[in-house]
Length: 251
Image (cartoon, rainbow, N blue to C red):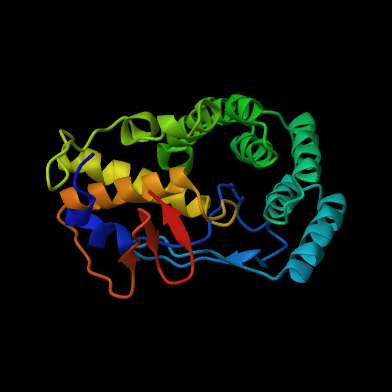
């Protein structure tokens, strides 16, 4: 494996501690309230969700608003929030209801895959994410292929966690990462990695080796693009993990 110390500062500049992978439709026409506040930044900052009590109110209200308006976006948003609340079986039931009313929605398939994944059924999750990929190949910045690789790696086990298995790339064993990708290909991969990492951050808890590897790969790609940012206050641990003083991701 390539010398991690050379570009660890790049990885640390993008390290955050909470993850989610869900597709939330835009605010329904008659409802402008959102379940979270997002931050647009070079680094994948964690999504700021409403507290649990407010999320519960949100999901009940959106069920009511669907019955009032018949706008499926309300149910889709509700399904997303149920995943955030950890109510995976209820989320699956809600998403299946949407599928019975209007088959073929990308957001339904993608969120269904996430719900099954979080419920511990990675095999079923793959089937739904593959449906999402077929329904809209450009969904999630065309990054669902990474999600599928994540699920396959989960099934195979930790010893299969690698850059090649997750993103189909090998950055070499030199002191600094090397890639055969063009600058445009690297930019595309960076956006896809960023999207998948950030969207998973509210559900996957430390310590998670796959998230650590994806962060490491995002650091590799950022390094190869020449976009290097130093960030103080974070350090490599003697056990091989990365710490920001609060959470630890194992490499």
